[in-house]
Image: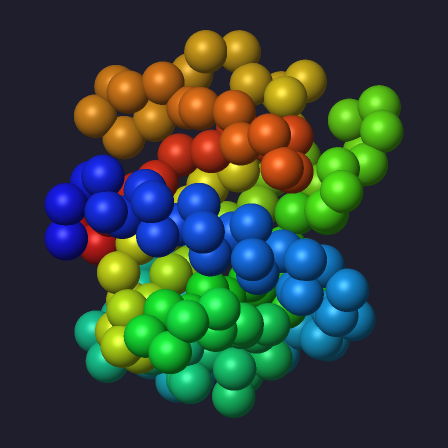
Length: 142
């Protein structure tokens, strides 16, 4: 999937999904399926893990389109929308995106007061995603 298409889909998903997902109560943390579907720091995902797998382990997932689903880890959820004043909210969020139930990419959000020009993947800068007032970095599946 091209970077432009991925970015466009992600922006649509985050805008549409945050309005729905931000209202949901966070689930209690639960174990990831045996074999470690998600590694420490939420940076890796094992082959075969789908959005359905994550829902079954307590993640919050929303499907703004029939083929696209975004998931947030238990206990953290999605960035608040509308944004909280005075840099409220978690320092960072990582959202997982699935296309036709297969992992496609991640979006890493960093609160503006904590973003100091650090590079995103490939030394590209993060970009401000105004609807949630967080800087975002899209990290494609490898």
